[in-house]
Amino acid sequence: MKTMTTTTSRIPGLHKMSPEERLQKVVEVTGLSEDVVRHLGNTGNLDSATADSMIENVIGTMNIPLGVATNMLVDGHDVLVPMATEESSVVAAVCNAARQCRSTGGFKTGMSNSHMIAQVQLLGVPNPEFARLQILEHKSDVQLICDETDPVLLKHGGGFRDMEVRVLKGRTGPMVVTHLIVDTRDAMGANAVNSMAEAVAPHIAKWTGGKTYLRILSNLADRRLARARATWALDEIGGAEVRDGILAAYDFADIDPYRAATHNKGIMNGVSAVVLATGNDCRAVEAGAHAYAARTGQYSSLTRWETDADGNLTGTIEMPLAVGLIGGATRSHPTARIALDIMNITTAERLACTIAAVGLAQNFAALKALATTGIQKGHMALHAKNIAVMAGAVGAEIEKVADALVKLGKVRVDVAEEILNEVRQ
Image (tube, rainbow, N blue to C red; front, side, top):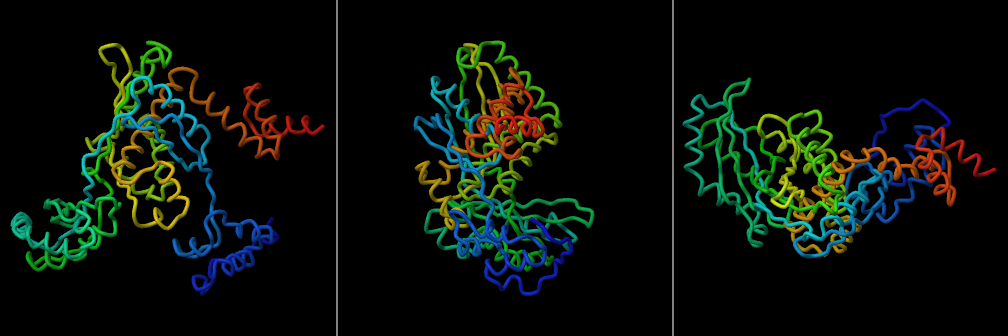
C-alpha cells in the first residue's frame, strides 16, 4: 500500500481543511496508495461531518465491533447490553456468566450518589491551616457561585452539595486544596464542575491572599460509586471444586498487585466496552477504577468473592462510575444513542449500575476459566477467527480455518496459512 518512505509531520493549515481534503493530503505526504483513500473515506455509520465536529484533524473513523451481551438480569429486569470491543471472548464471557446466575435472581445493584469533585489548588499562603478555615467560612458564597455558573444543572435538581478543604504537603511547599462536591445528575459532569472550579478560584485567592493554580475535576469519583452483587449456585458453576478455585484466584488478586492488575483489566474489558458503546469517557472511568483499587495504599481487586451459608459463590463489585446520558459523544454519536435505546436506559444511575453488573459478570467468567480450563482455551477458540482472517481467509474459509485451528490446539498465523492452502486446494 505504501510507495514511498519520506514523510513530514509539518502540514500547515491541515486543521482548516475538510476531512476529505485532509485525508488526501495525508496520503500524498505519506506515499500511501489510493486504496487508503477509499478505505478511510468509508466512515461507516458515523458521517464525516459528525466525526469532524467531535475531534480535530479528522481523516476517517476506526470502526470497532459492536456486540450485544444477553442473559443479563439486573434488578429484576432483562437487559440487552451493547458492548464495543475488539477483543475476542469478552461478550461471550458476559453472556455465559449472566446465564449462570439467573436462577438466583441475577444482579442486584445500587449507586451511592451522582456527585463529582472539582479541585481548586491554592499556593502561596504562609498559614495554610488558617487559609483552610477562611475558605470553609465562605461555603454559602461558594454555593451561590457554583449554582449561578450552571443554572440548567440546578433546574434539573443538581448543583453544589458540599465543600471540603484539605492541606497537603508538596515538594514546592504547602498547598490548600478545595473540593467542590457537585451533583451532576444525568451528566458525566466534567464540563459543569470544571466551570464551577474556574468561577470559584479567583474568590478563594481573594479570601486568602494566595494564588490559585489548577482548577479541574477529579476522576477519582469516589462519591459516585456503582455497586453490584450476584450469587452463583454450586450446581450452575460445576461444584465446590470450581468455587474454591475461583476463591483462590480472587485471593491471589487481592494480595498481589501484579495479579490484581490483570484481574482488574479483565473487569474493565466488560466495563470499558459498555462505556465506549454508550459514548462515555473510557479513560476517565478507567483512571477512576484503578485509583479506587489503590485507595488503601496497595493496589488490589475491585471485586470481592465469598461463600454464603449454603456454600454458593457470591460476588460483589464497587467502583467509581462517572457516566452520563447527556453531553459529549453520548448525544452526538448516533450509535451511542442507539446503544442506550437498546438497553432502554433513561438515567445515568441505571447505566452505571448496569455497567457494574457487566464488570462483575466479566470477572466471574475470567476467574472460572482460570480455575478450570485455563484462560487460553476459551479465549483462543474465539480468537481463531481473527487468526484465520490474518492468514488471508475470506467468507466461508474463515470458519473452516478457525475450526481446524481449534481442533489442532494451535491458534497461530503460520498454522492458519498452511490450513488455508489446504482448504483452497
